[in-house]
Structures are given as structure tokens and as C-alpha cells.
Image (cartoon, rainbow, N blue to C red):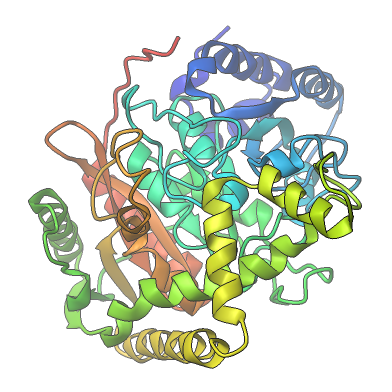
Amino acid sequence: MSDFNKSSLSEIVNLIKSKKVSSSEITSHYIKNIEKGKKLNSFITTCFEEALKKAKEFDNKKNFNGLLPGVPLAVKDLFCTKNVKTTAGSKILENFIPTYESSVTHNLWSEGAILLGKLNCDEFAMGSSNETSYFGNVINPIGKDLVPGGSSGGSASALAANLTPATIGTDTGGSIRQPASFTGTVGLKPTYGLCSRWGIVAFASSLDQAGPMTKNVEDCALLLEAMSGYDGKDSTSINKKKEKYSKNLNQKVKGLKIGIPKEYRIENMPKEIDSLWKKGIDILKKSGAKIIDISLPHTKYALSTYYIVAPAEASSNLARYDGVKYGYRSNKGKNLIEMYENTRGEGFGDEVKRRVLIGTYVLSSGYYDAYYLKAQKVRRLIKNDFDKCFKSVDAILTPSTPSSAFKIGEKTNDPISMYLNDIFTVPVNLAGIPAISIPAGQDNKGHPLGLQLISKALDEQKILNIAFAMEKSIAFKQSLNRWWE
């Protein structure tokens, strides 16, 4: 069997289309990798038997025109998959088997993809290190003592370790882009509403968005094309013509105006992050782009705003987990109220409880106006800042994260320090606009660092093109010693 570890998603698609390899061969390869990669703890559920059966069925087909013909993929365990356990990384859903398929995964299977399994994540997507999962923390393939980022940590770890050729995650405040940066992979958070939220376990409904996580920008464009599209079941879905991102991908950067926001130069930012940012600016200049200094004055309020809006929506969304219709139910309690209390007390982890308490507090009588209403007004101002800037620039370049991957356990007892990891990613979610993180270098320990490109709503093609051009110039190389095998 060939070694497909160096093959990109696009290359695997071409190999299957040209009948140089079979879907069964590719699927078997990734199953072997997953079995060797158990130390990473990136999978919660595997579907090997069904995957091999579907691969065989695909190989017997005569013609297939989908974008992902017979390609095996693992997905974040926040996407409901029909008849396959979906836990959201929580004890409260450890035995939940949906009777329906999320719209995004349905789109992938319609394009020919095959489910390899479900990937570990922070509980209900609440976390920046994948340490809040009921199923244990995921390990970054870059180093056995490092977090992979969160909440899509299992997705990033599995992708970087070649346990899946590509994957999908969700991004509520940076949960695709931060783990992509920590693992040297590509992650894109699309415009809010471009990918359906139907069938995704909800965290914060006005912020959650599914997106692709891949080895390179070309794969990212292909996967976004496959997973996006209008969905009548999601009231926030954008009804627009489906784009052909992969076919329209180019490296034309000349003449584009790229904004550099002064507010992203934060105190005590590591010199390596600043140098990386300057390197990105130089690459764009050499490619013929015009660099423009811009201001996003309300950026300093973004993190505070996010940690009011997101927990408020979470406290509302998580009220459905009461032990009555589905999910975990406590055996303790003399009456219904006590059963509710015990179910949530035993079923939710500490971080989820913390955010539910914050959310319930800011929505409570007497505090609603002071916190939640004010946060919504500031959110509007943050969006207005971006809207104003996009009148004079085509895209914005920033670092993806304020540091490289940190050690497991380093920030678990300091929630504020953990929340600060989202400082560069959160504003984009509040504004509902797209952003991509691409690997751009390494720190002095050899850990990957990412750069982030932001554009106005529905301008995914532009940031994909800029990222594609930058990727070629950066020529990022990552060599892993596969210590987990």
C-alpha cells in the first residue's frame, strides 16, 4: 500500500478519480493510522466497519461526480451523525445517538465522503485547549506535553497526525483557527450563515459556525465548497448561489489593499509573533499588495463582549439538558427539581458550569441591561469598525494567536489566561465575517505559529486567494517524528 501521509485531500481526490487507488485502499490506510494514533486521544468514536463497507460500495460504482469521491473523513463530535454516537465531549450526551444527520455532514456524504469517526473536542465547544472534554484531553502531535488548542482540538490533532486527510470543526470564538495555528494546519471560519448550523450541537447560536480544517489552502477551498450551501432548516442560512472556491482559486494579490490594525499589537506580545506578522506583511508587499495601517478602535472590548454574549446564549441553549427526554439522567433526587439539579451537576463539567452560571447571571433581572444589552450594543460597534475598514481595504492581516501551543495543565487553573488565547479570533465571530489561519512559521522551540486573514462577509474567495499566494511564498514545512506510533 502507498503511503498517503504526504498526500493532500485534493491529491487523494485525483488519485481516486483517476482510479490509481481505490477508496478501500485509502480508507484502510487511515484506519491503520488511527489505530496507531490512540495515544493522541483525538477520537471519541470510530466507524471502521461501516467506513470499509461504504468504501467497497463506492469502488463498485461506475460513475460518480461528487467533489469528495470515496474520501474517508473524520468530523468533530459536535455534528450530529445519524445512528452514530454524538457526545459534544460531554458526559451528559455520552450515549446520545441522533436519528438525523446534520446538514453540513449530509453535504459531505452527498459529495461522496465516508465517515471514519467522531473527533474529540472541548465539552460543548467551551475551551481553548481541549482539556475540558469528558473523554480526556487531546494531545498535540507536535509534542506529547502540548495542547492542540480548542475547541476543535481533536480535529486539529487528527489532521496534523494524518489520521484523516481533512476534517471539519466549529468556530464560536476561534475554535477552528486557534487549533489550526497550534498544529501547523489551515483552518477557515466562514461568514456566519454560509454553512448550516442545523444538526450541530449548539453552544452560542449567534456565533457558532462550521468550517474546514485542512493541510493546505487548496484543500480548504475544496472542503468549503463541499460543506457550504443554503439550508431551509436553518433560519440564519444565507440563500445564495453556491460558489466554486476550488476552481476559482488563484494567487492574484497585486493591487489589493491589506489592512494592519494597530489594536492587534498587544502588550507583552512575544517577539516571535511580531516578527512573523512583519514577515507576512513583507510577503504581501513583494506580491504587489498595498499595506495600509488601520484602526479597529472597539477591539479592546471584544473579549469582554464575547464572554457575556456567548455564555448568555449557552445558558439558554443548555437548558434543554435536563435528563427528561434524552442524555444522562441522575438517579438522585426526591422530586423533579432535584433530578434536574443533580443531572446537570453530575453531567456538566466545571467549564460548562462556569459559563452557564455567567450566562444566567448576565440575563437575570436587574443585570440584563447592565451586561447583556450593553454587550450587544458594543458588538454592533465592533462590526461597524470592520465595515468601515472594508471600505478602504480588501482584507486584514493579523497574527492568529498570541502564542504557540502551551503545555497541558499550564492554564487549567487560570480561566482568564485561557480566555486571552482568543484575543485575535473573537472579534471576527462577533462581526460574523470570515477569517482563515495559515501556518506561517515556528517559534524558537519549533512549535508552529499562524497568521490570520480577515475579509468582509461572503468574501471567502478573496482570503483564500491571498492565503494561497502567501502559502506558496512561506513554503511552511513541518516534520513530525510520529512519536505516538
